[in-house]
Image (cartoon, rainbow, N blue to C red; front, side, top):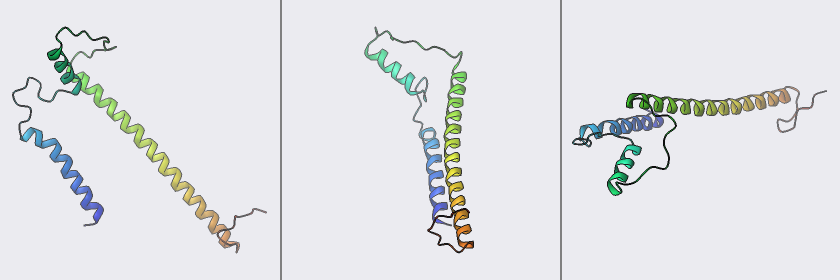
Length: 123
């Protein structure tokens, strides 16, 4: 097994452990919403500290259920991952294209008997 394969396997096991351990250890038992998001936890903490607090902003769109909210959040994450993957793919493609073009220029120069470091001059 190569070094990269060992690292990838270790990272995969770590991710699996992060997903399974909270469930296996029962970290959410006894709570109404055991795995609520940070927004819900912040809202409950604020209402405990200051019961008369009134928010100064309300959401533009309130999803009809928690499932729809989760689906919209997952869609947002997928779109963001797609944009990042596209960016890195284009960047890698440009780098590979530049390397291939440089290799072609050097090959043409070598075929003409020029030094590879010298620029190729077209007649």
